[in-house]
Image (cartoon, rainbow, N blue to C red; front, side, top):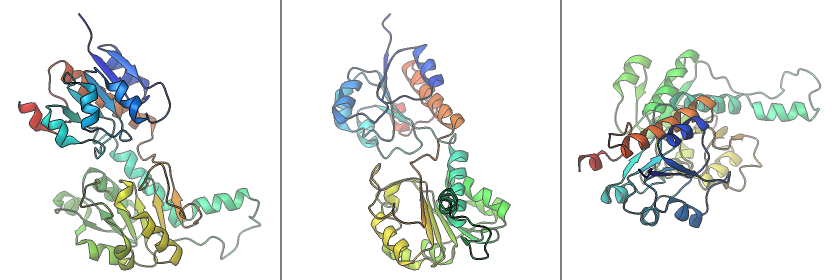
Length: 326
């Protein structure tokens, strides 16, 4: 019996690949980089399943290249703005993602950024390494208090809730805004649901946890920065285009806000000119889910989804469940 074929668009933790290789013929992108467009189109040709990454643009051209026998595109991410889900559904192709397993890792990294910006950790490290530290001083590298301050959480989904939950350890007052109230967040954390403008005006720290959709593109832009406190810190670990980077550069340069921490960028991997030169922003290379355990579990979920679908079973995390009803 001929084995079904699976294409993996980039190397992922070996445990997930081993699960796939036990069942199918598996081909993996041999390069440690994002595939060029023609390489992607060639790689998916004739495959029964594709395990793709958020850095892969999956659209009608890719579906055509894969062929009508392809049953599933398993995205190695919780977000799926890189995939034309409507087009996949039209063709009867199942699309899956990897939610939940990266909630802690992403929320932890948002807190890492919040502390790094507020206590000027990167600046201090560079200062000390450069031999500039000559002893304790009462005005040396003053940062911001965190405990007892007001935290604004944008988005009350899995990661936003997880992030807010950790704030209780710092006795913070929690404000949140979302498309709808989250009763569990209010009952368990004492969080207060409010509109976007109130949150931006009142919060000392603002952390963004929303998916990228047409309505969230440039959710934080010039007008929003004008509403924030001059002492505010903005954290973004969601998707880069949620924040208008040009407006962010100006807000940081002019002192309209105190600082920012970014794990994602509007035009990844490119970073808006001007950001790199600023000391009041901490920049990370999109590593929110980059722990050994989390990245392995993401791969295992994607692999299980592929295995189940190609064996005629229901996947664990389907984004377009209407396809399953056909």
